[in-house]
Image (cartoon, rainbow, N blue to C red; front, side, top):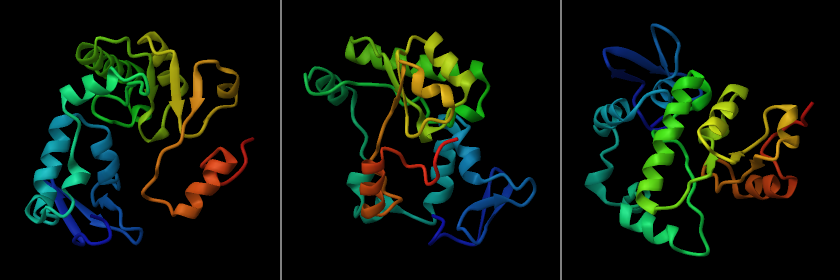
Length: 196
């Protein structure tokens, strides 16, 4: 949306203007539309899709149908039965858990864990933090929720490397070049500067 979208979007009676970085910021509060959506549940995400559809009617073109596909419960069940795959949580609403209270983050993680366990019949013991974002409180909440493998794109705290439950993970990142993806794989981190 940012690059090709309009200069202004009205969402929930609030005006969001595109800045020079193609991000939409609230005229009233300067909060980004992206962060507003990352902190909400399914209803706000669904509402945003209806609002933004007029600017990018992807369903009409069918050019990107594969991009919008989601796994069905039977496909999740089938994948969970494979000896080559492990199903883990990524949050129920894919919210930025670091922007929520520890109680809200824990509730979302538990909701995701229970949903996947009901479908797969397996214990879900791993969570990959959405956006690679977490706080110390979120880590503690994840452990209380029963996760024993906590996956982050980059460790954010010095003690993470000595925590046996923490793991670094990599994704195929569509927002960086192939060369930068390979560099991150070789370096073992997406971080552009060294850790302190």
